[in-house]
Structures are given as structure tokens and as C-alpha cells.
Image (cartoon, rainbow, N blue to C red; front, side, top):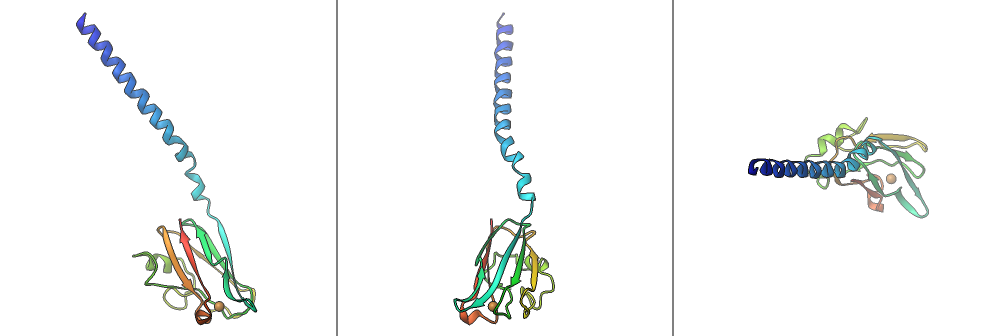
Length: 151
Ligand SMILES: [Cu+2]
């Protein structure tokens, strides 16, 4: 009789554990089902512009997820470019960032855009979360700068 009772108790405990496991599994499920969202990569457009109001990137803070593409467009007031600050980006990311920058003209430096309407697209694949500051070489003295923030 004692054996049967103990077996029953054990069965209940095991059932309880399974229930707990199932519950925590179902709690995990929502974050799993939302996981595909980051896989959908966005393309973010940034205007490089200069006029009476000054020289700037619009927006100057680019909020992106790793894998998003960023298209810089030379709107007016060029020449403009995009140069990332090697000493300020997250450690170890220079090579990864450089690898996603087509036709770089120097380390971490985009081509120079002299014609209105020119655009250039870089990817953020493989970048770890953090802030990646950049500036426009021709207009650095005029404060043309921005930052890429990887979430
Ligand atoms: Cu510029």
C-alpha cells in the first residue's frame, strides 16, 4: 500500500514538472514566433544635404537592426561622403563594417559623391549592437555628422 502511495505521489510530482515545463515552454513560444521579424531587413534612406540651414544627414541618427540596408543619397550641397570613426565604433567591428561598404575609397570611407541624386547602399549585416559614429569628410568642419545605432 505504501508502495502504491509513493508511486502515485511520484507520478503526481512528475506530472507537475511536466506541466511546469509545458507552461514555461508556452511562455517562450511568443518570443520565438516574433523571431522572424528581425529577419525581414529594412532599407533605410538617409539624405546627405547642404543648404542655408547647414550641412547634415537626415536623419542624423539611423536606428537599424543588423542586416538592414542603408541607402545614402546625395540630395544637394555636395560633395558628401560617409566616413566611420574607426576609434569610436564597437571593438572588432571595423573589418565587418568595411566588408559591407561597397566601393570604399579608404578604410571605413564611402566614395565621394559629387552629383546630386547619387546614392550608395551599405549593409549592416554582422554588426553587433552599439553606436557607429560617422561624418562627412568635406563638411566635418561644418559639423556634418551622424551615427548608426544598431539595436
Ligand atoms: Cu557633406
